[in-house]
Length: 225
Image (cartoon, rainbow, N blue to C red):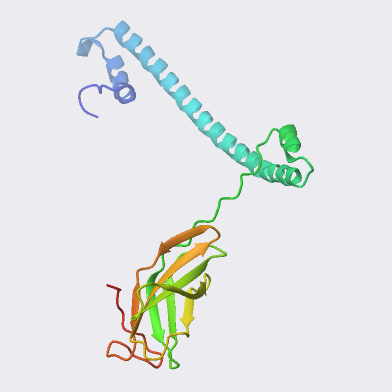
């Protein structure tokens, strides 16, 4: 430690403890009286005793807090299945609210409705050897989702529903493309119950041009103008 007494209590206590014995051995030599040094030594002893008590209390408090956390965690762990039993019993009773009121617990939360299917992205398409177009895509689809596929041929002005793809495999094969078609534009949209997801970007498949590769290869990619 430095030559000057620190400004904080604990470092000051340690600083004085390191010097009080030398001061008591010859107080007059450093301009002090025996009474002054004796009184200061008593103060140092009192401060050290209090500091030790504080440390003991802190240790006890830490141990008590850890013990409480362990016991409270065990309590919650044991109580959770009991509360679940109460709620299950209530749901299977003639009047669930009577059971909930008797137990003073809240009813089960209603199940959260599943979200609408996400927008189809990263759409791939393949022109099969028989001329059918197989589309596949990426999307987040809750259980029960389906995907409506609409198509607009090069000779048409509007889109027509051509079928549905399952939400699990996220693919659809269109085998109704008329012979001689030069291009077809597809839009895919997920549906689950009354919820409808965002439409995909319109995707163009070209037939019989340098942009298309038949026989199972990927068709040329294009966005509808």
